[in-house]
Image (cartoon, rainbow, N blue to C red; front, side, top):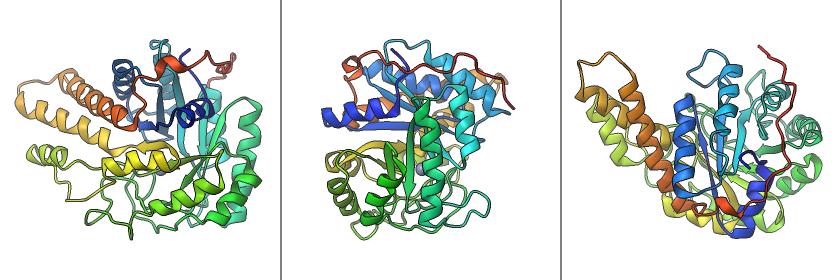
Amino acid sequence: MALITLKQALDHAKAGGYGLGAFNVTDITQVEAVLDAARRTKSPVIVQTIAGASAFGADELFWDLIMRTVDHYPEIPIVVHLDHGPDAPTCRRAIGAGFSSVMIDGSLDPVTHQIASFEANVEATAAVVEYAHGLGVSVEGELGTIGASEDGSNRREIVLADPDQAVRFVAETGVDALAVAIGTSHGAYKFTRPPDGSMLHMDLIDQIARRLPTTHLVMHGSSSLPADLRAIINAHGGALPESWGVPEDEKARSTKLGVTKINQGMDSHMAWMAAMRTTLDADRLSADPAGSIAAGRRGMTDLVAERMAIFGQAGHAGDYEPSPFRRPAAMPLLG
Ligand SMILES: [Zn+2]
């Protein structure tokens, strides 16, 4: 089974009334961590990565290793997804590597990084949908803009999604899944106080879901930034400022309102970093990185497994039929 498309996974999740976490990976042992959590909890899973945002020197090497790692987990339904593809060429590279799903983020102009017009977003997204669907690959688009850059390094203006535009966007692009900006931000710095309805617009999800009952909604920037992990990181040399993310109960509630894909980047990185820093501090005589990297991997597995239980995907790995999706047979080496 292993590789399935995002649409297959989210259709199952919607029918089953549960959400699927999409966990960002930046290193191959993080891929192992996420897939180990899926195996432990018998969960279908979405592994996602952002082009250029890994520990590897070249996306092509990392992406090829992700695909090979998937083959080691034949009993788990796995979506390999490109997160925040900035343009069509990047999406085509990911599809060429064998990814079963891509996100084209047409909400920002890929050259100027300014907020793109609705029409420009539609045009960029529709072109990727046409190419990807021709190869059986799912596509996620984005409407409105989510705070902070994809890797969390820069703040950016939040523009909330508009329900009328969401209906038009889906009709004109044909996306399988839609990221809707509801006030969340990417990265390790989100809200300056626990979020309430003036900051986290769960009502927008409800409004959009009612008008697009067959489109899958995606919540980005939905890490909760656990205070205990921040305390461990900061006790071992880190300096993360206090910040609040999306509470676990709000994430679970979002799946009842119509969200089927819950993007989680930072929490699993924090679990990784907390375990790694603790191990490095405890063994100052070691020069071999394997021990601290392995500790990070185990810490990440534990956190991802907890989230899989909260989102409701745990126990659903056996629900899936074998997928007809196959990665391209003759994959040219790129880059
Ligand atoms: Zn995002």
